[in-house]
Image (tube, rainbow, N blue to C red; front, top):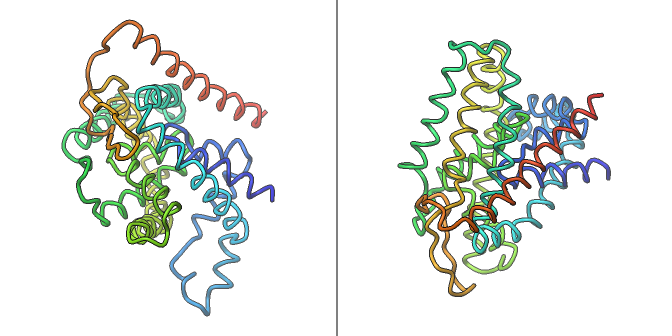
Length: 306
Protein backbone atom coordinates (compact mmCIF):
# COMPACT_ATOMS: atom_id res chain seq x y z
CA UNK A 1 0.00 0.00 0.00
CA UNK A 2 2.89 2.36 0.78
CA UNK A 3 4.32 1.84 -2.70
CA UNK A 4 0.91 2.54 -4.27
CA UNK A 5 0.80 5.85 -2.36
CA UNK A 6 4.31 6.65 -3.59
CA UNK A 7 3.08 5.85 -7.10
CA UNK A 8 0.22 8.31 -6.58
CA UNK A 9 2.73 11.05 -5.79
CA UNK A 10 4.94 10.18 -8.77
CA UNK A 11 1.85 10.21 -11.01
CA UNK A 12 1.01 13.64 -9.61
CA UNK A 13 4.51 14.84 -10.52
CA UNK A 14 4.42 13.36 -14.00
CA UNK A 15 1.17 15.05 -15.02
CA UNK A 16 2.30 18.55 -14.01
CA UNK A 17 4.69 20.17 -16.52
CA UNK A 18 7.69 21.45 -14.60
CA UNK A 19 7.57 18.86 -11.83
CA UNK A 20 9.96 15.96 -12.21
CA UNK A 21 8.85 12.44 -11.43
CA UNK A 22 12.52 11.63 -10.85
CA UNK A 23 12.69 14.29 -8.14
CA UNK A 24 9.65 12.83 -6.41
CA UNK A 25 11.21 9.36 -6.58
CA UNK A 26 14.36 10.76 -4.93
CA UNK A 27 12.36 12.39 -2.15
CA UNK A 28 10.38 9.21 -1.55
CA UNK A 29 13.59 7.17 -1.32
CA UNK A 30 12.85 4.83 -4.24
CA UNK A 31 14.85 6.45 -7.07
CA UNK A 32 17.74 3.95 -7.10
CA UNK A 33 15.40 0.98 -6.83
CA UNK A 34 13.20 2.38 -9.58
CA UNK A 35 16.07 3.04 -11.98
CA UNK A 36 17.59 -0.37 -11.32
CA UNK A 37 14.24 -2.06 -12.00
CA UNK A 38 13.55 -0.05 -15.17
CA UNK A 39 17.06 -0.59 -16.56
CA UNK A 40 16.51 -4.36 -16.38
CA UNK A 41 13.29 -4.19 -18.39
CA UNK A 42 13.48 -5.99 -21.73
CA UNK A 43 11.15 -7.38 -24.37
CA UNK A 44 11.84 -10.88 -23.04
CA UNK A 45 9.13 -10.25 -20.46
CA UNK A 46 6.55 -10.77 -23.24
CA UNK A 47 7.80 -14.33 -23.84
CA UNK A 48 5.54 -16.59 -21.71
CA UNK A 49 8.31 -19.07 -20.84
CA UNK A 50 10.59 -16.29 -19.57
CA UNK A 51 7.96 -14.07 -17.95
CA UNK A 52 8.48 -15.28 -14.37
CA UNK A 53 12.26 -14.82 -14.41
CA UNK A 54 12.05 -11.44 -16.15
CA UNK A 55 9.28 -10.24 -13.80
CA UNK A 56 11.49 -11.07 -10.81
CA UNK A 57 14.49 -9.44 -12.49
CA UNK A 58 12.70 -6.11 -12.87
CA UNK A 59 11.30 -6.14 -9.32
CA UNK A 60 7.90 -6.61 -10.94
CA UNK A 61 5.61 -6.33 -7.91
CA UNK A 62 7.29 -3.07 -6.89
CA UNK A 63 6.96 -1.60 -10.41
CA UNK A 64 3.36 -2.77 -10.62
CA UNK A 65 2.47 -1.04 -7.33
CA UNK A 66 4.11 2.20 -8.48
CA UNK A 67 2.34 1.92 -11.85
CA UNK A 68 -1.09 1.38 -10.27
CA UNK A 69 -0.65 4.43 -8.04
CA UNK A 70 0.56 6.55 -10.97
CA UNK A 71 -2.35 5.55 -13.21
CA UNK A 72 -4.89 6.36 -10.48
CA UNK A 73 -3.29 9.75 -9.91
CA UNK A 74 -3.03 10.65 -13.61
CA UNK A 75 -6.60 9.52 -14.34
CA UNK A 76 -7.94 11.58 -11.43
CA UNK A 77 -5.97 14.71 -12.29
CA UNK A 78 -6.65 14.61 -16.04
CA UNK A 79 -9.99 16.37 -15.44
CA UNK A 80 -8.35 19.10 -13.40
CA UNK A 81 -5.54 19.73 -15.90
CA UNK A 82 -7.96 19.72 -18.83
CA UNK A 83 -10.11 22.35 -17.11
CA UNK A 84 -7.18 24.56 -16.07
CA UNK A 85 -5.56 24.55 -19.52
CA UNK A 86 -8.88 25.36 -21.19
CA UNK A 87 -10.38 27.91 -18.83
CA UNK A 88 -7.41 29.26 -16.85
CA UNK A 89 -4.48 28.95 -19.28
CA UNK A 90 -2.62 32.13 -18.22
CA UNK A 91 -2.39 31.46 -14.45
CA UNK A 92 -1.70 27.77 -15.13
CA UNK A 93 1.21 28.55 -17.47
CA UNK A 94 2.54 31.10 -14.96
CA UNK A 95 2.57 28.44 -12.24
CA UNK A 96 4.27 25.92 -14.56
CA UNK A 97 6.86 28.55 -15.58
CA UNK A 98 7.66 29.17 -11.91
CA UNK A 99 8.12 25.47 -11.29
CA UNK A 100 10.45 25.13 -14.26
CA UNK A 101 12.40 28.35 -13.62
CA UNK A 102 13.29 27.20 -10.12
CA UNK A 103 14.14 23.66 -11.25
CA UNK A 104 16.66 24.74 -13.91
CA UNK A 105 19.42 24.73 -11.28
CA UNK A 106 18.94 21.02 -10.53
CA UNK A 107 20.39 19.62 -13.79
CA UNK A 108 22.81 22.59 -14.01
CA UNK A 109 24.32 21.78 -10.60
CA UNK A 110 24.74 18.16 -11.70
CA UNK A 111 27.26 19.31 -14.35
CA UNK A 112 30.75 18.63 -12.98
CA UNK A 113 32.83 20.81 -15.31
CA UNK A 114 31.03 24.04 -16.08
CA UNK A 115 33.32 25.16 -18.89
CA UNK A 116 32.55 26.52 -22.36
CA UNK A 117 33.07 23.11 -24.00
CA UNK A 118 30.19 21.68 -22.02
CA UNK A 119 27.90 24.67 -21.46
CA UNK A 120 27.78 25.47 -25.19
CA UNK A 121 25.43 22.46 -25.49
CA UNK A 122 22.77 24.51 -23.72
CA UNK A 123 22.29 26.45 -26.98
CA UNK A 124 21.15 23.52 -29.19
CA UNK A 125 18.72 22.53 -26.42
CA UNK A 126 17.13 25.99 -26.50
CA UNK A 127 17.11 26.04 -30.31
CA UNK A 128 15.46 22.61 -30.47
CA UNK A 129 12.58 23.68 -28.24
CA UNK A 130 12.25 26.98 -30.10
CA UNK A 131 12.21 25.17 -33.44
CA UNK A 132 9.57 22.68 -32.32
CA UNK A 133 7.48 25.52 -30.87
CA UNK A 134 7.72 27.50 -34.11
CA UNK A 135 7.51 24.80 -36.75
CA UNK A 136 6.92 21.33 -35.33
CA UNK A 137 4.15 21.53 -32.75
CA UNK A 138 0.82 19.80 -33.30
CA UNK A 139 -1.69 22.35 -34.55
CA UNK A 140 -5.10 22.59 -32.84
CA UNK A 141 -7.79 20.64 -34.65
CA UNK A 142 -5.27 18.64 -36.70
CA UNK A 143 -5.17 14.86 -36.69
CA UNK A 144 -2.94 13.55 -33.92
CA UNK A 145 -0.53 11.12 -35.56
CA UNK A 146 -0.18 7.87 -33.62
CA UNK A 147 3.49 7.76 -34.63
CA UNK A 148 4.03 11.20 -33.05
CA UNK A 149 2.21 10.00 -29.91
CA UNK A 150 4.44 6.90 -29.76
CA UNK A 151 7.72 8.79 -30.22
CA UNK A 152 6.71 11.60 -27.85
CA UNK A 153 5.82 9.09 -25.13
CA UNK A 154 9.14 7.26 -25.56
CA UNK A 155 11.17 10.47 -25.26
CA UNK A 156 9.07 11.86 -22.39
CA UNK A 157 9.32 8.71 -20.28
CA UNK A 158 13.10 8.80 -20.73
CA UNK A 159 13.21 12.38 -19.45
CA UNK A 160 11.02 11.52 -16.48
CA UNK A 161 13.73 9.35 -14.95
CA UNK A 162 16.04 12.37 -14.49
CA UNK A 163 15.64 14.52 -11.37
CA UNK A 164 14.81 18.09 -12.37
CA UNK A 165 13.62 17.21 -15.88
CA UNK A 166 9.86 17.02 -16.48
CA UNK A 167 8.66 14.55 -19.10
CA UNK A 168 5.24 16.19 -19.26
CA UNK A 169 6.82 19.50 -20.27
CA UNK A 170 8.34 17.72 -23.30
CA UNK A 171 4.85 16.56 -24.25
CA UNK A 172 3.66 20.14 -23.79
CA UNK A 173 6.37 21.53 -26.08
CA UNK A 174 5.55 19.19 -28.97
CA UNK A 175 1.81 19.81 -28.57
CA UNK A 176 0.91 16.29 -27.44
CA UNK A 177 0.23 17.02 -23.76
CA UNK A 178 -3.21 18.62 -24.10
CA UNK A 179 -4.57 16.07 -26.63
CA UNK A 180 -3.44 13.15 -24.44
CA UNK A 181 -5.03 14.73 -21.35
CA UNK A 182 -8.20 15.19 -23.39
CA UNK A 183 -8.15 11.54 -24.49
CA UNK A 184 -7.75 10.36 -20.88
CA UNK A 185 -10.77 12.43 -19.88
CA UNK A 186 -12.75 11.34 -22.95
CA UNK A 187 -12.07 7.63 -22.43
CA UNK A 188 -13.02 7.77 -18.75
CA UNK A 189 -16.22 9.67 -19.61
CA UNK A 190 -17.43 7.61 -22.59
CA UNK A 191 -15.45 4.33 -22.83
CA UNK A 192 -18.18 2.60 -24.84
CA UNK A 193 -18.54 5.25 -27.57
CA UNK A 194 -16.61 5.47 -30.85
CA UNK A 195 -14.74 8.49 -29.49
CA UNK A 196 -13.96 6.54 -26.33
CA UNK A 197 -12.57 3.64 -28.38
CA UNK A 198 -10.41 6.02 -30.42
CA UNK A 199 -9.16 7.64 -27.20
CA UNK A 200 -8.33 4.17 -25.89
CA UNK A 201 -6.32 3.51 -29.08
CA UNK A 202 -4.36 6.74 -28.63
CA UNK A 203 -3.68 5.94 -24.96
CA UNK A 204 -2.65 2.38 -25.86
CA UNK A 205 -0.13 3.70 -28.39
CA UNK A 206 1.06 6.19 -25.78
CA UNK A 207 1.55 3.34 -23.30
CA UNK A 208 3.47 1.29 -25.86
CA UNK A 209 5.65 4.33 -26.51
CA UNK A 210 6.39 4.53 -22.79
CA UNK A 211 7.37 0.85 -22.74
CA UNK A 212 9.63 1.36 -25.78
CA UNK A 213 11.18 4.38 -24.10
CA UNK A 214 11.86 2.40 -20.92
CA UNK A 215 13.35 -0.51 -22.87
CA UNK A 216 15.44 1.43 -25.40
CA UNK A 217 15.68 5.17 -24.73
CA UNK A 218 16.54 4.76 -21.06
CA UNK A 219 19.54 2.69 -22.08
CA UNK A 220 20.60 5.41 -24.53
CA UNK A 221 20.17 8.02 -21.79
CA UNK A 222 22.25 5.95 -19.38
CA UNK A 223 24.97 5.60 -22.03
CA UNK A 224 25.04 9.36 -22.69
CA UNK A 225 25.14 10.14 -18.98
CA UNK A 226 28.00 7.69 -18.51
CA UNK A 227 30.05 8.76 -21.55
CA UNK A 228 29.03 12.39 -22.15
CA UNK A 229 27.49 13.32 -18.81
CA UNK A 230 28.21 17.06 -18.68
CA UNK A 231 27.31 17.71 -22.32
CA UNK A 232 24.08 15.72 -22.00
CA UNK A 233 23.08 17.58 -18.83
CA UNK A 234 23.87 20.93 -20.47
CA UNK A 235 21.64 19.99 -23.41
CA UNK A 236 18.86 19.11 -20.96
CA UNK A 237 19.31 22.48 -19.26
CA UNK A 238 18.83 24.06 -22.68
CA UNK A 239 15.58 22.13 -23.13
CA UNK A 240 14.31 23.41 -19.79
CA UNK A 241 15.31 27.02 -20.53
CA UNK A 242 13.76 26.82 -23.99
CA UNK A 243 10.48 25.59 -22.54
CA UNK A 244 9.94 29.02 -20.98
CA UNK A 245 9.16 30.25 -24.53
CA UNK A 246 6.21 27.86 -24.60
CA UNK A 247 5.15 28.68 -21.04
CA UNK A 248 5.04 32.46 -21.58
CA UNK A 249 1.61 33.15 -20.02
CA UNK A 250 0.69 36.25 -22.02
CA UNK A 251 -0.86 34.82 -25.16
CA UNK A 252 -3.63 35.64 -27.59
CA UNK A 253 -6.22 33.18 -26.31
CA UNK A 254 -9.58 32.80 -28.07
CA UNK A 255 -12.64 34.07 -26.24
CA UNK A 256 -14.35 31.37 -24.18
CA UNK A 257 -18.06 31.59 -24.84
CA UNK A 258 -19.20 28.21 -23.52
CA UNK A 259 -17.95 25.00 -21.99
CA UNK A 260 -19.33 22.93 -24.87
CA UNK A 261 -16.37 23.04 -27.21
CA UNK A 262 -13.27 24.82 -26.08
CA UNK A 263 -10.16 24.52 -28.26
CA UNK A 264 -7.26 26.31 -26.60
CA UNK A 265 -3.88 24.94 -27.62
CA UNK A 266 -1.30 26.85 -25.62
CA UNK A 267 1.47 25.49 -27.81
CA UNK A 268 0.14 27.40 -30.81
CA UNK A 269 -1.35 30.47 -29.10
CA UNK A 270 0.63 33.56 -30.11
CA UNK A 271 2.84 35.13 -27.44
CA UNK A 272 1.87 38.74 -26.69
CA UNK A 273 2.81 41.53 -24.28
CA UNK A 274 0.87 42.05 -21.02
CA UNK A 275 -2.26 44.13 -21.46
CA UNK A 276 -2.07 45.85 -18.06
CA UNK A 277 -0.13 46.11 -14.81
CA UNK A 278 -2.96 44.24 -13.10
CA UNK A 279 -2.52 41.28 -15.44
CA UNK A 280 1.23 41.23 -14.75
CA UNK A 281 0.63 41.21 -10.98
CA UNK A 282 -2.06 38.52 -11.26
CA UNK A 283 0.16 36.16 -13.25
CA UNK A 284 3.17 37.01 -11.09
CA UNK A 285 1.38 35.63 -8.03
CA UNK A 286 1.06 32.22 -9.70
CA UNK A 287 4.63 32.40 -10.99
CA UNK A 288 5.94 32.97 -7.45
CA UNK A 289 3.72 30.15 -6.19
CA UNK A 290 5.37 27.85 -8.75
CA UNK A 291 8.85 28.88 -7.60
CA UNK A 292 7.82 28.31 -3.97
CA UNK A 293 6.49 24.86 -4.84
CA UNK A 294 9.71 23.91 -6.60
CA UNK A 295 11.87 25.21 -3.75
CA UNK A 296 9.71 23.31 -1.29
CA UNK A 297 10.45 20.13 -3.24
CA UNK A 298 14.18 20.88 -3.07
CA UNK A 299 14.01 21.35 0.69
CA UNK A 300 12.19 18.04 1.08
CA UNK A 301 14.86 16.34 -1.02
CA UNK A 302 17.70 17.87 1.03
CA UNK A 303 16.01 16.89 4.29
CA UNK A 304 15.67 13.36 2.98
CA UNK A 305 19.38 13.27 2.10
CA UNK A 306 20.31 14.58 5.55
